[in-house]
Length: 179
Image (cartoon, rainbow, N blue to C red; front, top):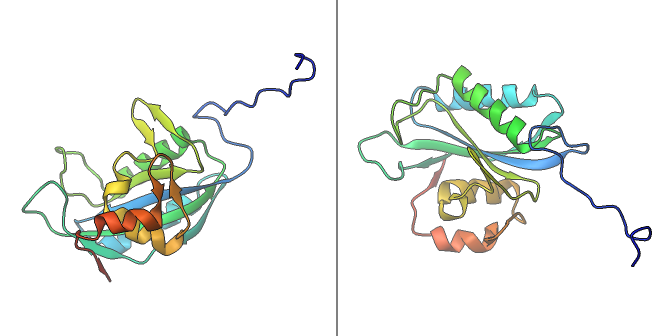
């Protein structure tokens, strides 16, 4: 095929630049300090106020034990679906700002928190750069992500890992209770 007949290459926009059409993104919510229900309400309000963003759905709340640490209160978890024109980096920056507003501190690795917002998926994007990995690198290993994600997006797939429905069976041994 000649260069003139070849269709133009499609490139993704730079990670901080808004995309032209909304994409479905998924955000994990978790909290084990303060009032998790109020923290979720604040997160939903702030996410809905982001430019080019609409909260499409959110899962019910779940209770889970902390992962990788003992002696902390249980977590309250949920997953939020967004339709957004924000690029992955811009959305992550917004999530970090919302966490800060919600009282999040990073005293030490795996510290308890008033609000934790993790970017799980951003459309079908696969991103690996300093401070940003999409899909979230451990989401396929965690019932506290997969179960609430399955509630609002049962047909979702995690690039490189498979369908949420199939992955749920691999975390069936992890305790999780719907509230």
